[in-house]
Amino acid sequence: MVRESARIAGRRGLAVLALITLAAGCRSNQPANIADLLSTDELARAWAPSNHRSWIPAQAVLATAELRGDYLTVRNIRNCQYLNADDYVVRYYDKTFDLRQLQTVDFVTVPFRDSPTLAHTMLSFGFRNGEYVAVSVEARYEQGETYSPVKGAMRQYELIYVVADERDVIGLRAKHRKDDVYLYRTRSPPELARVLLLDMMARANKLAAEPEFYDALSNNCTTNIVTHVNRAQPGRVPLNIGGLLPGYADRLAYDMGLLDTQLPFEKLKQQAQIDRVATRYADATDFSQRIRQR
Image (spheres, helix red, strand yellow):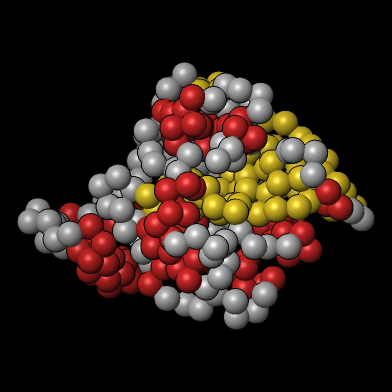
């Protein structure tokens, strides 16, 4: 079984190396074969996903949710207090949301500095009382692990739905990782926002019971968002390069009319950039309102 897993991983390794060449530029020091990419232990670990590993503290607890009528209770909403990107105090809380108050869905993109054709994407849901809750689909790291696009395509990480305050997932990236962060208001009406949020929470519940591998090609932040959108509105987002190169996801969303199209895209993107204001107001109680001021 391990040999068969290694053989499959080898084929996927060639595919992902080709993708990385397209996405980030050809590098002269690419490994010659799969043995240079994964150790024997890593290949064996790729056989079955697990929720029982030595996770980093920020991803050690999984979010779950329970729906009763119009009230959605989300458990383990993350609200870390960051000293820097690597040092933080982990905090979680539970909260019940009245879905009748749900109004908006915002699309957040965080391009990779070294490979702008790649990006992390997430959604944030806004309520009438000014509260927001973000959902970030991520690779789940064990102690000592960092992200590798190659290993991300070779079943070396599990998948996690991080449900968090915006000050956590946006503040971390803007202030401490020094990333560019863009926040776009989508055209999703409240009824679609409700379907999206419930579908994402159902997926979080499923992952808590049945872990899955993260896959940089087919089970990542953007492909999962596309799946949720298409479950809410079948066929709304076609399969295209945006799923593989999510650095283009904001432009594709604009072209498909998922974002406000009253402004030219470049002007809209300029207005959507929030990393400077997110850094300035990282500790403000009205953080979510501040990052939306134009």
